[in-house]
Amino acid sequence: MKKFCILILLLLIWKQDIGQTIPSQSMLMAHSPPTFQAVFNTTRGDFTIEVTREWSPAGADRLYQLLATGFYNQNALFRVQKGYVVQFGIGNDKDVNYFWDKNPIPDEPVRAKNQKGTISYARDGMNSRTAQLFINLKDNDKLDTINYNGLHGFPPVGRITSGFEVIESLFAGYGFEPANHQDSVMIFGNGYLKKKFPELDYIITASIKAE
Image (cartoon, rainbow, N blue to C red; front, side):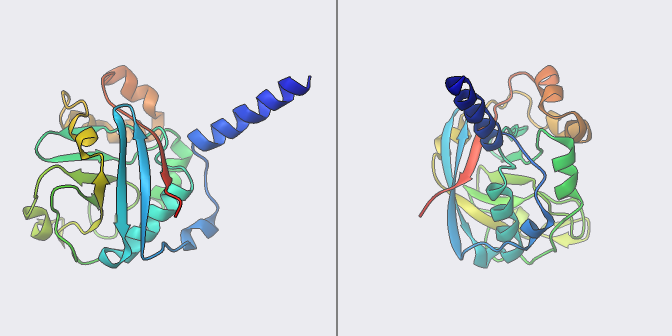
């Protein structure tokens, strides 16, 4: 009986670590340190990012909040366009997705360049950054100044410090197409993607690296 209870406890801990839960509103007040690192374990291997708050204070705070609550665990790397970008940031739980979707962060100016290996938020209009990120696979200079839905450029928030070869090895056979299904993924999660796009790679876990 004791061994059974220990097993159940371990399973609950594993579920909490791997899955997603709706955070408390107080988490939205959490601030990141000036710099921090996070490790992403994927189906292709690991990569590490370094976030620089000076580049995008609101963006860094949000990324810190997302990582601290396990949001990127089990995220699909759903848009992989070789020589351009990799995009992710839709969770496997509808309620968690809508929590972050209803709490966007304010727009900020572009303070760093969208160079190869940098990470920026996807956005679709004014004050629309929530949880979706993209990794630049090359120097995307146009993304520093492009006028998109009345906004100028996409502000980077961090960069890949190791494991860029993992990013370059992600399955890219679907290109942009899975991004056309974001509304369905928001509601139905990974089950939808695995049925429609079974070859996609996934983030298994993503967590803030201990100092």
